[in-house]
Length: 569
Image 1: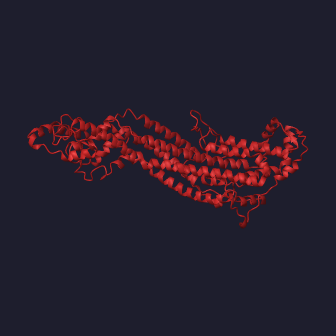
Image 2: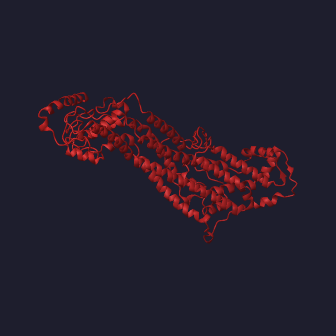
Image 3: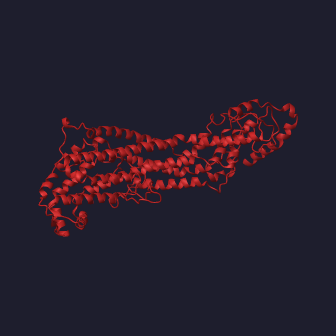
């Protein structure tokens, strides 16, 4: 079919000048419509003929009688290239801006929750522990600093960082609870070695680490996925228009001008063959792009989650305070075992009893009555975060919808560009078929580079894939792998975006502790954490927490759904 079509075009090109030569003067038509259309494109009418001239000089368009000079054909070729570049960018504009705007919205939401969580902890601990907290507040400030640094792509190993936090807290508390002794750095290092054996904070560190790591791994990987999607889309949208494509575009869009038919649009199938040839490499991106979008949707399901703020009763400040209380209650046993293993420390000589300081740790959180509900900025921020949380729930639904819409975008791009009535004629018998008005007979080739071998309109070298497109395919493949790992609660090597040439190798904190689930459709329903309390102190702390904004709100927004409920003490 393609060979017969090329023979027909060749015969038309060969004989049309001969046929036109008979009675040339009498048959030459006016180029008035062409001049008007050409001028409307912003071109000068200098050297534009008023009537048709012989077209032997044309290199792209049919060489019969024509309204085009060589200069016009060159300018129309340049115009074809420019319009095609703009057309691809415009067609992908909505999809590209989706990644930009949703990345900004998600990023702002997550960081706002994290900032408010730190303020909540600082306010609660200042009120509860007073001077003792202020003297040791850098331990908690470092915790939030490192969490922020991890989320923003810093070189942070989450598991090690959280272990360090509990080790530092243990050292500080051990000194405060045994202030009548002097401890050297070596002795405190010995104390830390007994942490796993003694579990001075109970099971709080392990459970909190599992929740925090899964939340932050998912959030950081998702926001990086939005960035990668944006960058890939922006790069691919700047299409590389090779010479054979420019020739085909010119022939399709502007050769009707030269034939005196400036208002005639190309045939639908003709447009498809041209676009599939010009966008062959972009179509090859589609398979990896679709896998990337599927992985983004899986992590989005995790981040959307089943949680609501009213059900969250386990804020991080209460958990850490509960851990402090556990150690204080067991301080005698812990100290005795440490002294047995590390040796008896030397008296400090300060004559100060540990009892006075220890008593300050006996503070308990009492629940607020309705009349005592906080009205300060620290208290009312919970109401504001509820609004933020509901907004984020709607935002995640919106993000997922936009992600689904972007699937198969690159392979469908020729269909979008060649829409009937927009770029092409609606009537398949009254359209430009590459040399005259009439039906276009060649079959439409399939999508992708290798299928362009028999493209009748664009001469595509299928042995030379576009390097930029191949780079973007690899970038998507790497990001998809990260997303799948994040979906399962695992972190892998993460390139530090702020430090060229160095990666973080961040740990997931789930080695041996977090279940690995198969990648695939799963339910996002998760249990309410800490539903069954077994002691009054923890219940009181939970009720107080319901009036305070905390990192649990962050977990509510981004915590990956856990398989099995693990209640707190």
